[in-house]
Image (cartoon, rainbow, N blue to C red):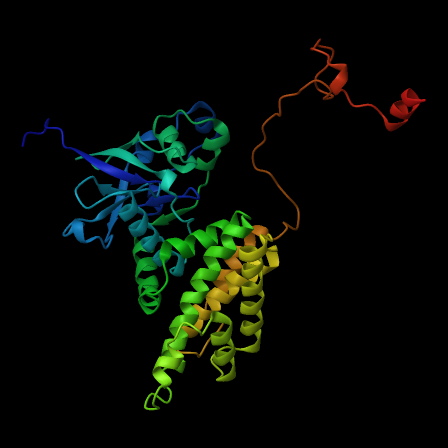
Length: 369
């Protein structure tokens, strides 16, 4: 092949969030300046570059890897056996590994899975087919067409080296291999909805994950006991054992603590009220579902030795809802454009509409007399 031959491979692009960079090493950081952000003169080629590869676990991709871009997008070959659902499942499985390894990203959305072109040079372009905010942001950055409200994220953006990503994957593998019963997309969607304060969706996904884990503990801790008793196996494996009953038994045999018992009961009660009455769950109930799910994972992966093994992840994921304390020191300022009524509007004439203008309460009462 001569040097001028073009190698162009159609790919499926899964754009992730929140925005971050995957770099070769610390010297590979973007380091965009405020002037570059405001004038769209940042290093566009880095935004179009790839950095590393990962095993996507897709049978159709035998001997092929998922390519990870500088912006954290996941690139899959467009080929038979690789469709949107396979991309979503593979990406979220990798994101789950990363989460347990300390790198937390939102679940990838179907709206953020589109098409692209990967070149033999290791650079790529998103080329359409998706309408999600993350995919549109990626496309706008690559075309240097994003507003500076968006490109401000390029300044001191969070970043991980490829070594850190590989290490996070290896750290996460023992955890996820111990809990094959959970659905990575469902679990990550629950966490993502929780962080976005979408309480009903968060509770549904988190409680479904918790139920899967309760079922696993039931199979491991309850069913093996007295396995030689006639008729017992059919009884304890029957559908009559709902999650509430399983939690009660697991509590009585000491598998779960009183604290976890309370958390699971509160989450289950809120989920039942949502399902049967349409009652929007409280934030506290969703928080209990989040912490309870991670506590169940802790029990399973530590063989019941450490119920708080992943407490640090719960604290990290819930930090977005904690009020900011201390002094706020903005690093960059932008003038807010004035509208009529603002002190900075001045004397410039503007269209007046008396029917929408606000009046003092005293003036309204005076007009009614």
